[in-house]
Length: 209
Image (cartoon, rainbow, N blue to C red; front, side, top):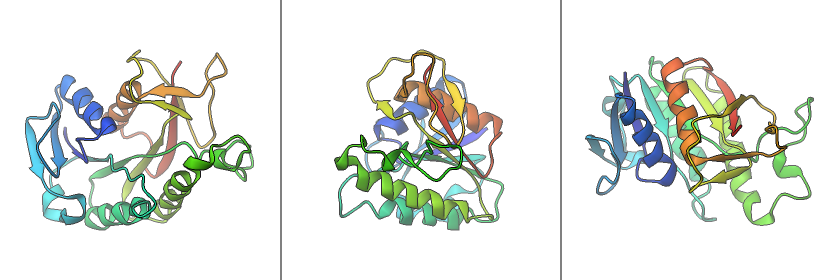
C-alpha cells in the first residue's frame, strides 16, 4: 500500500507518517521544506502546487493540513477543494484530519459541539472553518473521501496507548465520560482507516478508551 501524507511536517502529520512507516507501509511525506518525518520517500511541494500526476499511484492521500490564523482559515476549504479536484474520479482515497467542533451533540444532528455555551470563543472561527470544509466535502461524490474528527480534547503530547473507540457523527465519550485522544492514538486510527477503507464518503470520529 502506498500512502502520501500531505503537510507531513506538522504535529499530526509526523505521527501519521511514523505510524504508517512503523507498520511497513510505503509512505511518502509531502512537505514544503526539509523533511522532518520518518518517511524515506519525500515530495517537496506546496499543497496548492500539487498536481494529479504528483498523486497518481497512491492508494491513499492523507490531508494533514492545518491553518490557525484569521487570514488563513479559509484555506481549510480551498486546500481541500484543490486535493479533491486533483483526485476526482480516481480510486485514490482521501483521508482528512478534521476537527471536533462540527461533531453533533444530539440525535437529530441539529446542534454541534461548537454551538455549546462552554465552547471556547477563541476556537470558534477554527471550528467553523473546519465545519464549512466538511460540508463542502460532503458534496463531492467524485472523490473517495473520509473525514476523521478527533475527540474534543486533542492532545499533541498525549501518550500512545494503542487503543481508541471509533465513533460516528456524534461526540462520543469514553467510559470515564471524557472526550480526549492523543495525536499518537489518532494516528493509529488514521492508519487503520487507510488500510481498511471501511468508511468511504463518511465522517467518523475517534476517542481514547
